[in-house]
Length: 306
Image 1 (tube, helix red, strand yellow):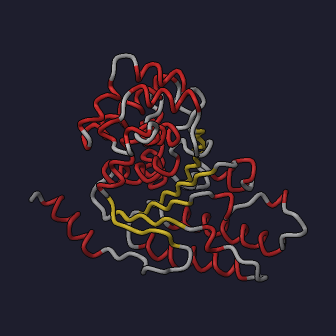
Image 2: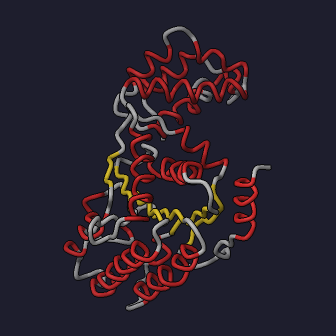
Image 3: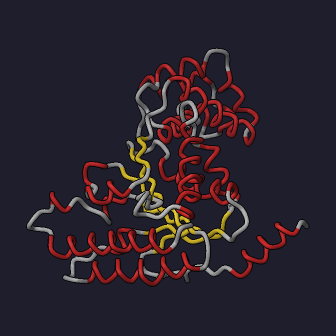
């Protein structure tokens, strides 16, 4: 084993993760992670969009290490928006893995924040929960080494304060948003190797002060025709590898026609359409080995049952 690999292995073995059940933590793991690596490959985007997102994150870490935040106000925050099902969360997890592989030499960790667990109807509790998460949990693990933080559905945590209803305890929500912003600022100032990846289906519901802190805001689009063809090939390939009889899905012209019929469909729904095709005809009895290309086209023509 090379010296650099030994150093990385030792660092990983010494790196601790939050305990299971820590308030506000949905997942925690060391990076790189093989499952997250597969997630990166599973999201198919046009041109070099994925590469640009990765390059931006890598450049941001390197810039923040040597240029002060006063001269270059980078917070290490990447915001991904887009409709449900386009792959934002999957891409975020894959990005965490790619960051660790692109910037080796330290023990990287990943923490996914559960914003719903921080919300509370009791006055003051949301603010205290957010403060504890940022000042104790996240800051402690950021001090231990490079860290990627994922905040899925970030509008739950950083709600637009300008649109708060008087019926939803706006004072507590306002204070919780304030606490999250203060926590993000401290992380950015004190820990240069922290990257915060946030996702949202409803960017209009995000507080403007958080959006202004994002180093990159990118909208993940619905797949175009070429993208839908690639998604179908990937999904069908995986099904055929597990069920050789499903080769009927690869009938000539099926993928091209399926891509045409699925215009406006998100990647998640498109992949599930392949699964629905396996149960479309009663004759298949739910056996994927009996599925045909016509079954897939029928699903897309007649509409999903979901």
